[in-house]
Each structure stands twice: as structure tokens, then as C-alpha cells.
Length: 410
Image 1 (cartoon, rainbow, N blue to C red):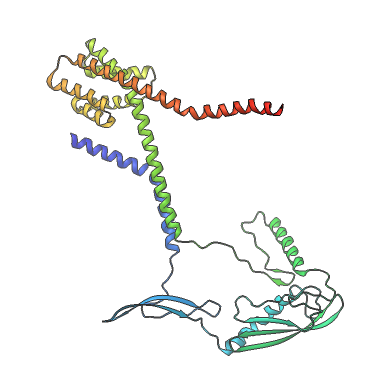
Image 2 (tube, rainbow, N blue to C red; image 1 turned 180 degrees about the horizontal axis):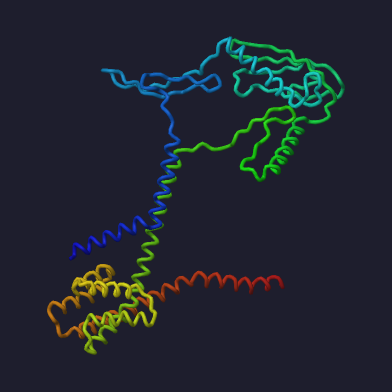
């Protein structure tokens, strides 16, 4: 019978664990942490065959740390700098042919052509996706500055020397500029036109599923790149910290709930004990006395965990469990010393048939009421301590209300 009770209690604990909100939070945090951690993993730099893939020409040199295991000798740590792949002259010439229109378009900075330059030019040192180091030199600093700013307000012709370099490969271009008055900043114009175009498309496609951004504006091609942060394995640590905090918070809530339940039971226990003495003294047997005590709580609509446990014990008795086993189950569920003493007296009375049960219960009731008075005294002292801070704050407010007018009138 005791084994069946333990099996029942174990099943109830498992049911609470897997159906509670806390378990679901654990599952969600663990899943998010593992997914973020696995997605942020990187491939090893050195293959099992000892191959190290060089970076492409547009990437940085690699700095690889590895351990070389030498047979019959041991292991030796190494740090190797693997330079990026070099391009051949043929590849560079082919890249230059592709790069030149992009270079010219970027250099013009929104101007129509080399023959009609009305705004500032752009001097830059690199084009994304190409390996060339680019430099610009204006042969007439009075017309075009070293940064590409158009200085002359009159029509004229100026040559800008553009040099592209990559290791030993070099290409020089002479860009002949026919410039006019610097009337406006073409970059601002392009930006303004792009803003207007995006607003127009957004208004026209408000009922569509997607917003299609413009690919070109005023003859200039446009590409877009979303700004995002790459996930980091630190998320796994944060997930573990979150799990720990949830666990600590849940344990704190459970402890607080247990303490609240224990206080309610200890507060109501002397009253239940007194009713039990009264019903037994009137000639009622133990089982009927329990039923009468629970029915009184239903009539008076008194909500207390002790009455819920009494109802559970009555249901156990109705299923055929012996009174002694039911009292033991009640004692183990509540786990309060006073209730344990009470159920022990009832179990002892069932086994030995003691005739002085009422006297023993009266003595227990006296102890229970004394303990209740002691707890009420302690709670009163705790309440006074909690009110100390608000009283001090109120005193400070009163002092300010009294002293400020006095100082103002001085």
C-alpha cells in the first residue's frame, strides 16, 4: 500500500514537471541556445590531408594556428601566415576591362560624362570586388583639388591622372575633364531622387506582399545590403544564464508558495483540532467527524489548503484505504510537525483503542493555540519592522513641509 502511494506521488510529480510553464521555458531557451551555437560554428582551416585553402585576392591573409603531430617525436605547435592568392597578368587585364566602367562612373560622382562635369568628382583608393590600389592626381590644382572638389567656376579642361596598381602590375589612365561652374552637389541630387522614388514605389505597392526597391536612379545602378550582426557562441552562455535565472526564480516562487501554504495550514490547524474534539466528545466517530469538519468549511466557504487535504483524505477512505494509511498520507503531504503529532495520536488510538483520546487532543489543542499566539506576535513584530521605512520617509516629508516655509520667511 505504501509502495502504491509512492508510485502515485511519483506520477503526479512527473505530470507537474512536464506540464508546467517552467518546463516549457526550459525547452524554449535550450533550443534557442543550441541552434544559435550550432549555426555559429566554423569549418577548420586545415583539412585532414594537410591542405590550407588560401584566401581569394580580395580577402585578408590567413593566420592559422595548428599542432603538427610528428611520429616518434611528439607534437609541435605552429603559427603559419598564409598569404592570399595572387592574380596573373591575364586575370588583371580582364578585371581591368570589367572595372573601368565602374571606376569611371564612381569617379564622375553623378556627372553626366567627362565632357560635361558640373559637380565635384570622387577620388577613391579602391573599388569593392577588385584588387587594384587606385590613386588620382590632378594636374591643375586650381581647377580640381586633390580630393576631387571642383574649384573653378569657369569652363575649362583639366587632366586627372589615374593609376591602378596590384603588386608589379600597373595601369595609368589620363582622364580629360571638361568642367563647368560648380552649381550643385550631384550626390545630394541622387540621394534626393532616390528618396522620392522609394516613397513613390512604397505608396503604389502598399497592397502588395513585397516592396521592390529601385535598381537604378538617374542612370546609376543601385545595390542594397542588409545590416546585421553575426551570431556569436556567447548566446549559448547567455542561454545557460537565462536557464539558471529561471530555475532560481521558479524555486523562489515555489518556496514562497510552500511557506504561504504552511502558514495558512498552521493558522487553521488549531480550529480544526478544536472541532475534532467537540465532535468526538458528542459521540461521533473519527470518520464522520472528518466529514463534518469538511462540510462546515464548504458551508462557510472557507478556503484553506488544510480543508483540501482533508477532502482528499476523505476520498481515500471512500476508496477503501484504511484509516491508518489515510492518516499517514495526510501527514506526509502536509509535512508539518503539529499535524504529524495529531495524526500519530489518531493512529495510536486506532491500534490500541486508547480511551483518553479526548484528553490527549485537548492537550494538543492547548499547545496549538499557544503556538498560534506566538506566530501572531512574530508577524506583528515583522509588520512593525516593515512599516519603519515608510514612517521615516513620512517623517522626512513632514520636516520638509515645516522647515521650508520657515526658511523662506526668514
